[in-house]
Length: 102
Image 1 (cartoon, rainbow, N blue to C red):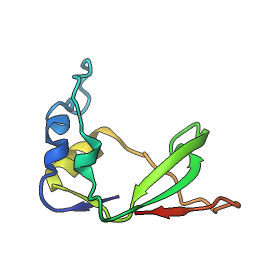
Image 2 (cartoon, rainbow, N blue to C red):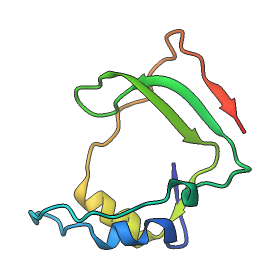
Image 3 (cartoon, one colour):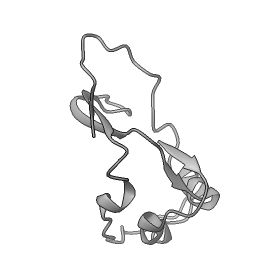
């Protein structure tokens, strides 16, 4: 979950390495510290589900931050320019349990 706001410093290097739209290039290795993305106090939702893109394979263990991270308009647009259709409609729980951890 992402809200528009200030540039996300934890993702700055990764976004600088993104190729331009339609540009085919080898991936540039970038290290991201996941701890820098989340506030320890916010907590997270945990559940088992599936991929949000084809083939929607089961067995994915999701961890979703309770509060969205912030990214700049430029970072959001850079992502959208490269990736479309990266989600599917919300699915019913179908007996799954959603846990909250803090």
